[in-house]
Length: 553
Ligand code: FAD
Image 1 (spheres, helix red, strand yellow):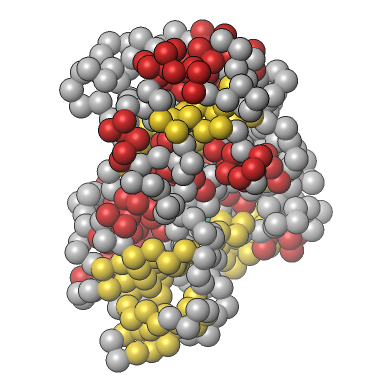
Image 2 (cartoon, rainbow, N blue to C red):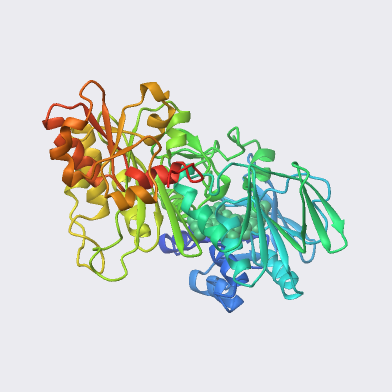
């Protein structure tokens, strides 16, 4: 077996190592355009910020180690320039000597990744404007940082952009973030990013949402970023984090099928339109695990697993890729945001029916010191209760909950299964009713009809004359600190003796801080003849949805 692999990082190196474990006889050639293989792309921002102190730590495996341990014919600084499908050969170019040569294959795996987008704006090629993909990029940015930077502009508030922001701020650089969307972290639902935007603002980051760069100009102080709004931002360093596009040139020129957004089309075995050519990683179109539709998700976990699956299939195993859920996590200073499965905006866009709940638990028992707050949003099918997606933002414990929910989604579990989940508990780690169980209880109660809810945005969207009677069941001091406009305050503990003050010809929407006392109030009211619903997720959810509202004080 002559196996050629194009791209020697996440997908390509995984495929090569797995292939060798399955076959000592195969001749495996791994082509990599750059000087490094199997490096830690995901660690690059933390090297810039100094958290990873040594550059060498980013080299997960050196070319030499890869050659010796896996007996690979490893060709770094070698670019594959063309594929001849009919003759089953590729044309490679040694980037050092310039020599071009051909290599034949029985099977070919394409793992060329995705390249950062560089929008064709005036001045985009001026010195000082960078993208970040590999160690050479990081060296260039580091050199610029070492020259002394006071102000930097990061364009794009996605995962990589915000990781860079954190690391630049740690070095005392004043940062402005310019983001086209009206929120940070665009894959998340907007309200879930409110705490992240607040965290950034709290660290002194200037966040320009709903804005875009129009041009870059050389200025007296290195560079000026001109925005469409007319605003001009001086900077000695600009980093673009506006997304990536699949490196599909080889595939397109060879006549392999690609999807509308450029991802190389593959089947469940990761074979392209030519069954002897496989493709993996950021360069491919994948099936969205929840939605079932083709999508592109540039993440390291899927790329690594796909490399392994492609090698398995090549060596005769019935390996299949199930699809990508988009499970992702990012730390932004002291906050963590994580998600898995479908977001609410994706569900809405596809007209897929869903329900949602929010819970705001602490990551472990509240009585044990150090409990950190989180918000967990759960999206599920209104008929079956199947979990469709989840997002969480907070501090410690966000990772664990999203990982549990990622497993639940993959296993096709429902909110009723979440109610039953038995998770590790002692007060340092969780609660006897874990946040996952709590989300299950709330969602299960909703579907069973025990716990009818109205969403904050449904409530706010209704004309004032059609809104339910709004009842705040928190303590007066909580109410005084801020409440939803128009609410009447009767603490839940006093509710039974004040029922006569409530209308019985109108629906009552009860709310508290996070939803729990609102739920109890709803149960009291419904059992005493009132029509009542709970405002899902309470005042905390309202604060996420209406962060700069006219909260009454
Ligand atoms: P790559 O890792 O990009 O490797 C492709 C390689 O192919 C490249 O080295 C390229 O030089 C080579 N190549 C391309 N064309 C040719 C050719 N014609 N001939 C020879 N070689 C070629 N993902 C996460 O899940 N979590 C994270 O925290 C995370 N953080 C990230 C941070 C940064 C700064 C970056 C850049 C990415 C991050 N990612 C993260 C994304 C993750 O790194 C990618 O999803 C993953 O590396 C994709 O693997 P891949 O093998 O498809 O492509």
